[in-house]
Length: 514
Image (cartoon, rainbow, N blue to C red; front, side, top):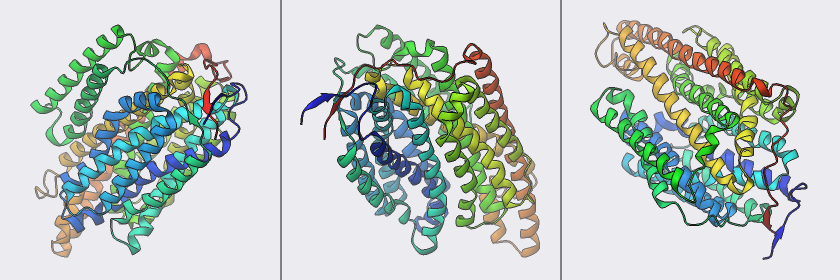
């Protein structure tokens, strides 16, 4: 199959069809995590899984995904983005089948880790292919459509999970991935062009080991800190190891001839602030969704399906603003688009923090829609700024950095917001039974076995305490988003008249016909 040089200014002839397939890839990955969150209660009952088991069923994926991203991006650039994408999807799909057939929590945790490894190859490859298929003039629109696909995954996931659990067992949360992966693989092989690997010299093995070790220690410390304590010796040791390995990684990358990551990118103000905007957005989003699921299903007693429907306004708003973000950014400029997006996220979180145990479902859904609108508005321009900061030959590296930034922001959001909520809840429940004062699910479990008058009093106290605590956590998340909006607005003030024309740093692309 001959290698041909595509016209850099025209793009690949099948680029829009290929974009639809690549967007389906993103839907598959985001769908899995959102469906799983809905299935956790059923899974816990079927497997007799402990709270710790459930946490690691979720976190094993996150830990491996975040840890492997940079190395996966580097390998994908070497072997070609399409090969990396196909291989990653195959691993993700096989891991889904094995996860569905698991008999114990330990087996499921292991196979979720395998799924995370596959996803680590998928995410950088999709963005790298989009960057190299589209000419600079069309990339903003393409990135907007790609970002909107994440909203579709968020939209379909909770509703799909709730509907599946009405008829099937928890394993359906993993079986649903199989037909989607097969359909996506067929589409990739049919319409996505092969992109030649980049001869970037010797693979930076030491850099890969240092970055992998640093991210693994950091993510594990963040994940476990709410349970172990932020000042626990193990937590502090892991943070120390992460810092030492990160320092060694930086020192090595500045000396090596073919670095795994171009650290000079972080001296680019636009790149650094766009990365910060993405990290804070996912910090706020993941921290919020983690608590909101308990609020809807436990405080309000909604079914998984109705709780899933609560994500529909969020996802619709996110998809709408993502799909139109190219026009919005062209009109406002990148700086204003990023700032406005963060302000909307902060406003939505601030409004959501006022929720009480009596707040009705449409109001809560409306508040989440504001958050979704802000997220959709800033994701595409932030991603475009990051990818436009490097030549197209380094698109996989830039895409890997984006994914690491988003994942670390999300993990940190769950840990920090979760710790704030937990601390305030436990403080408010000091007079309750010890188990009920640990967390809201425990309080509901105690109430289920108690006499009715006592149960009603305990539930009323626990639900109120959790709702107030959730509000405190959301205020912190809103404050972080607001502070970042101010920082981005000031930091990019020199670009306020910029109309978000993508930076043309790419060279003619090598795509394989057919």
